[in-house]
Image (tube, rainbow over all chains, first blue to last red; front, top):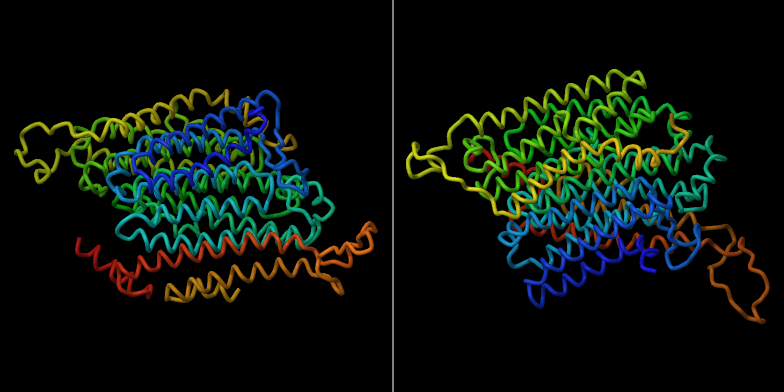
Length: 499
Length: 113
């Protein structure tokens, strides 16, 4: 009985949970954390249940309140979004466990609002992924974004200013998307994604449809921070409080890429997007530019979080390029990379959070001797770094492998070269950090008992390190499971028409 | 488009926020205009004389975009609220709302470090 309502529960549970948490914040602040833990665990279980159902019975169509689409709002769960849902809820749950201490220190008087926003953000992204209605997607997108703006704005220092800039860019992006959906509604008279996809083939010649596609995609590019439109991202992520950064950084851009895949493959259909238009070539080159410039900008940074933020800009390029190459291997790579990149980003941001929690800053000069004082955090960072570089047993290698073979299959050697270039830059980037942390002894000013005494173990709290090592382990496990994920899930997530 | 220009070109943060709001309102008007039909009336179906005769859709404007825009208005208001709250926070921190003055202060701060 309950299992047939799982698609609705994944939105309703965190939504109600957010209100309960906000209310409990007024009664007693100690309830906030256990409550959000409970809500997020329930979400993860729901998502796992959904994935199981989808694997057994195929696509699920859930009619909200019993209205049939296209009149009613429907929730569509297929292989693609069941996978993404599991990743989202897992990332949110691990992160809430890992950051309990740093949240308690930073927002001691604002625990209620923080956790309410946190869970509300999860509501938004789960909803974006689950919905089958284009306008509903916009509303949930704004729920996620608004709570994201607030989460970032709660930080100190330049956070408020960075978050305000993010609001401007985010609103432009969302408005463009809304405008695009408006044009689609104008010509098809429907907002249901499946319905639009059925009605559109008759209208492929129409300029309105073309404009709708371009403006939707442009809006999504702003939201996902593809290279020329990425300006909001580095500051927003670097100045956000660590607990929100490690939630928002893995999820926002990845979910936007999911939306792009959904819109391109399932609303406009690959036929129209890839075959009829000449856009794909241009967008792949844009992605190449994003990869190259993201890597170069990352090289120029002097603090860990900003480096990571620019790496995200480059990673977005990977996935956008993968989708628009338009062949099976490349799209498989893009979808796989959504999963992997979410886990990798979580891993490195958690490591950055650990280091920040202990040392208070994340500039490279302060990393001296960190391998000695914080061996486990640095091990986590190293694992994340290896995955981002793409060293074989970790998951990063496999998605890159698919992307590169997709690039070769599409005869797009520029993209292949950009991928390899960015891997090389990442090697330089991370080994520069490790050089500081491994070979140089701890700074004397940090060690008042004299430079010669062995640096004491000064590790972050157990929950943080435990969660970090768990995520680092997942990187390898996901890598080993790649074959399984691709053949059982992603294979079905891509429309059969794509070779 | 005026709003878009406002966001990009203006240096004052409040003016940017106003620009953002104009952009959103423009989209709301666009949706509302989709629903309009020539010579149609408001979409209220009156049930006088028993009310079981068929409804001629051409006589009524399409109410769906208006309903959608109720949600969009709520979203716009919420965005405005968050943006203004952050603008207040920025003002408390820097004592100004002009972008160039803020970035100057930021540059000074980083130089001090």
